[in-house]
Image 1 (cartoon, rainbow, N blue to C red):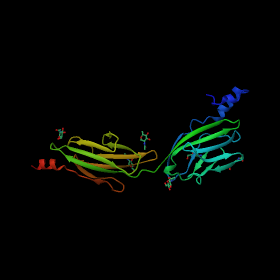
Image 2 (cartoon, rainbow, N blue to C red; image 1 turned 180 degrees about the vertical axis):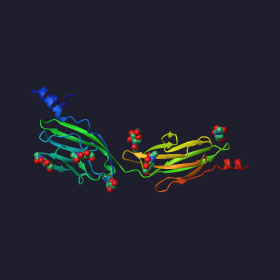
Image 3 (cartoon, protein in one colour; image 1 turned 180 degrees about the horizontal axis):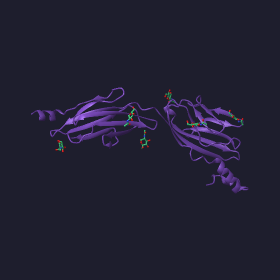
Image 4 (cartoon, rainbow, N blue to C red; image 1 turned 90 degrees about the vertical axis):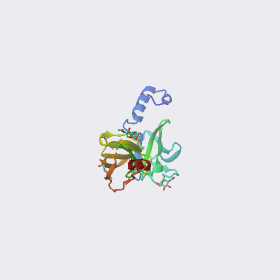
Length: 241
Ligand SMILES: *[C@@H]1O[C@H](CO)[C@@H](O)[C@H](O)[C@H]1NC(C)=O
Ligand SMILES: *[C@@H]1O[C@H](CO)[C@@H](O)[C@H](O)[C@H]1NC(C)=O
Ligand SMILES: *[C@@H]1O[C@H](CO)[C@@H](O)[C@H](O)[C@H]1NC(C)=O
Ligand SMILES: *[C@@H]1O[C@H](CO)[C@@H](O)[C@H](O)[C@H]1NC(C)=O
Ligand SMILES: *[C@@H]1O[C@H](CO)[C@@H](O)[C@H](O)[C@H]1NC(C)=O
Ligand SMILES: *[C@@H]1O[C@H](CO)[C@@H](O)[C@H](O)[C@H]1NC(C)=O
């Protein structure tokens, strides 16, 4: 519970350490993982520094590249980095970054030098994402001889990384890029919605069936869904025979 270098105050050990303890702990509601949309401005706060209690502090990118440092008298020094023109500080230790880009994703570390000589660090994981674009459902329908249909649904998107969530008439389905379902005349879902999401956004597309083997249309905003009706030739010729 005590800061790691409490030994450096042998005289007023307990009192000093208790004071130090209350002044340097990060409030528990400060997130150490931040997800943002590319192009937005972001501020990173490792802990709320109280001016006068520290000598200097610095923010470090990717564990070893110093970006910007605050030292006595409100002076800041920017170090050469891809972030140097987009960052500024306040005297509470907050790092402001303008227009974050996906390749700004990294660990950011606030390194504080306290009056008294000891150092302390807080790390924040920043992840920058683009908003996902609308996915497109592609469907393959394969007829079987007993009027059932094997239906394969593919949720297509260029975006990575994303999570896939499928919903049918009766609720959630397995969460994967592709879905394979057997439709019988008695049991089939009239609609399938695929939602792609990342931590900052989500979009969906829906495919509709009017019967076990017949697709209706896309409900897509851009009407961009494409259908691929693949009747396996062997099965077809068997049916026609
Ligand atoms: C940092 O950003 C958060 C969320 O965007 C905002 O609530 C907060 O006020 C900002 N802090 C400062 C010091 O600007
Ligand atoms: C440091 O700068 C901030 C904002 O520019 C100001 O509010 C604050 O009073 C300054 N502190 C000192 C010690 O000069
Ligand atoms: C980071 O990405 C931006 C565009 O998103 C690009 O202009 C820049 O060159 C990239 N920087 C590095 C160091 O890769
Ligand atoms: C229909 O045919 C498929 C493949 O030929 C088979 O897997 C399935 O069990 C059959 N269903 C019924 C209800 O007979
Ligand atoms: C995917 O879902 C998992 C579990 O909910 C989550 O931890 C992860 O961040 C998600 N990934 C993306 C890219 O949204
Ligand atoms: C699909 O997206 C639309 C907006 O584009 C939204 O209104 C709807 O709730 C979403 N459906 C699902 C199942 O996420």
